[in-house]
Length: 478
Image 1 (tube, one colour):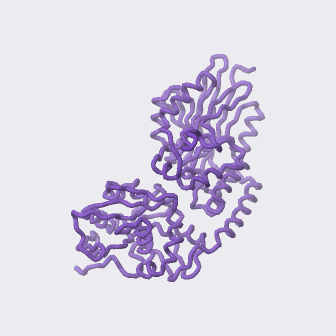
Image 2: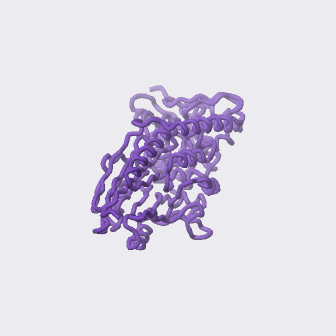
Image 3: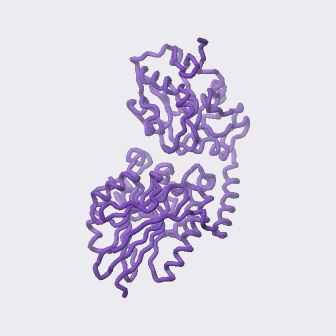
């Protein structure tokens, strides 16, 4: 047996159902793996979560089974889950997602409440063995505890869990690798505080670490987003010294590889099947609903009214940038709704004082907010857009610095000292675009329904749709 052996780890993260890049990723994994294994070197292929994203036609139509089919055909060996798998899939759908997986799901901090254990489709950790090397593979996802609980899961805090697992496994293995969908800052903390982690492969924050980052004896690597890069970690194990003697990271550009023809064919078939499945009718709409991000639209008002109705609130707020395509009168299909509102965003309700509500409205009408571009927080659009409102009438002075003169809530003057229940979208609770919303009281999230699933119900309410054509933002002449 040689004194040293080389381990190559190929890793992806946050692919977010960008199927266009997957045939090239498969080619990258296959070509490199074949070359290294031909030299007698060891290879692992892993994904760090958020491979699925329900904004994709193929993912939505198959509840992620198309993603699993791709991963099977690409040769992945180990994966962990991200928040897009964990809290945008209803529990029964997540339980079924990996039913036909040819890889191992490692999800150490996800707990089935009934048993108090890792779900049956996952393992808390894995040990991959070759004659000359033993590698422990841990996996954790970001602890959005309230959301997971609403979806029917319990979640353990990652740091103490990882400490326990490392302490248990360190005497039994040569190398410990963590698949971490926690984000870059959390990974840095783990590297500083947990002795014994050799490699942390990260995700969630979409960091592109060209050559990784060393913190102590731990290498942190992350490969950006959308499958634009495949990460490569090269590790040398010195068997005589019983230690890692070499550790480095690099990135391969996906576009430098030709697509795998077999996977291209598979995806074409999946697209055709998804188109057929999502063409079925979702709701009948009584009027055309156009979109517009720089001004009030009936569709924006209808979305706000839908959120108000769904949450039982007094007021509804929904930014127009959530609406990415118009809907035409008549039959609206599930594909139409997905195209229009692809975001994995849920309704929520929050209690605001009248003063806080006025602050939101004043901020919402400013051009820099209307035109502000946004990435993350589940938002799959481009810019915030004009704020759609329901249960309100707002008289405002337009101009470079618009100002609000008067507000009525359900026909009564806004009372700064009174509290109001507001139905809106969960991204405002995380992004702090409107601090008044994030700082409000009695916040309640409504899961598992996404916005398009709510519209599939509310757009059938002809009265709600007709009311959306009544202006709520009323310009006042100077």
